[in-house]
Image 1 (cartoon, rainbow, N blue to C red):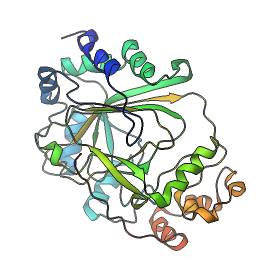
Image 2: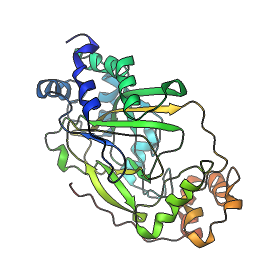
Image 3: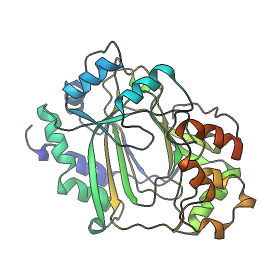
Image 4: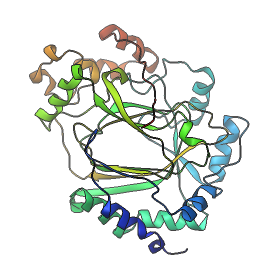
Length: 329
């Protein structure tokens, strides 16, 4: 298996996949890869790393396998800061006030295993990109594309969000090397707003000029969770495509691993970017005040030290601690 066309059978699976509508428009393909291919993929040295004794050794293993730290939502890009946080678990150190921690994501830069190199070239092939864009009627001339093999370390968290308007399409494929991965607490939740928070979606629907944001976990309910290994989910972000992840697991023995890719609109402009703190009360939302680049709350939060942001959040908009939990389909 040396040519990207060896994975052409995936194109047919995507083309024939039924578009589901609950909890939002998406396709969900189980057993994406043929069993023999999937076993080879998750057995590769870059996917099935040897067990590490501590975080420092884990990073050495990742770097030796050609992974690099990338900037990614819900994450930091400083290795030492991450290791320090992972040891102390100081909840004040967060990337978003709707979350309780942060993680780190690494992307495989240059696969050495033959099958991973072939797969990587297939994911970046014109045939594959055309296939996923056609499935959701997206004009490729208006988009750019990125994709790769990624590992997500413990603590990685993105609270419920539909993705920003600039994102045209996203896909995720679970290629976890751990045989018990489906029981781990690191899978993607697909959610719906609670009835008393539906007004947020209605606000986003009211104007394409209002950017979509992350919201607290307790504003939504999990409809399903992408636990299955060798499964693929694809959707085109919209006002209802709520999804989230909160990883809590032992990454020293095995890591959450995915094929991940996006299409991005080249041109996408919004006039205002309210945060969830600005949307806590449907009766208090002033559309005229939102139609500025940043709200007063957002400006204040952005200039505060990270360690004080959680306290600031509690002062301006107290809320109950999230009690969400994962469940199977």
